[in-house]
Length: 240
Image (cartoon, rainbow, N blue to C red; front, side, top):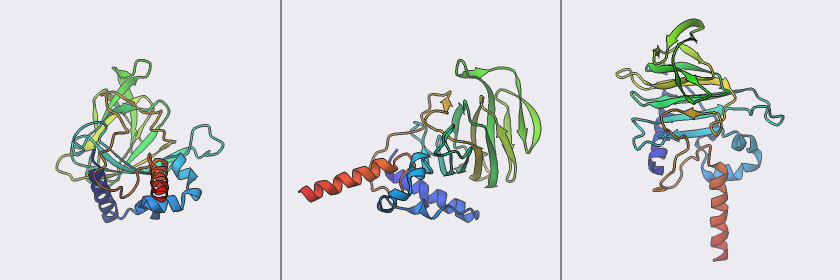
């Protein structure tokens, strides 16, 4: 994915969320320089990867397979330093833009349609021992009411509706065609994208980036890398 695409999709997500009345922290628009200036205060943000996440899941077409999201708060499982047991995200899900099938070993999460279009979620019962889809019925909670599904059944969330997704319930989701992009909130147990995502369709979460223009706002996974690279570049200029 090109950096110019990441920059553009960040701005589009910000405009979308703000037009629906959702406001993010002041540092949502901080540059690398600003993060460097505040680095001593931001250890929790860096450690827990609070901030931007733009991904194609390894595809070559973001608008077909991809996601724009912002992690607002997070904790760490069994951590005395970061004991917060919950996390929160906000997402922009475009029409027919797919997040591939995956499940979590530990995290239980609620998806809440906060506004915009409708969200389609395909749900599957997963076999965590073999990391594959299993058959059989299973029960989910939609708007607090139980619903029995079979693997592959769809649930459509209109604005204001929500669903609880348990560990080992694999899910694939996208915006419903013709309804416009949707603003989806996620409230969950602590989030660990490095160790608690099991993708079932050969997707990857953290992608390579082609640096065709400067970073506008860092991704949550690259704060320290970008700050260190900037310091190294500044040191080299001084030595020259």
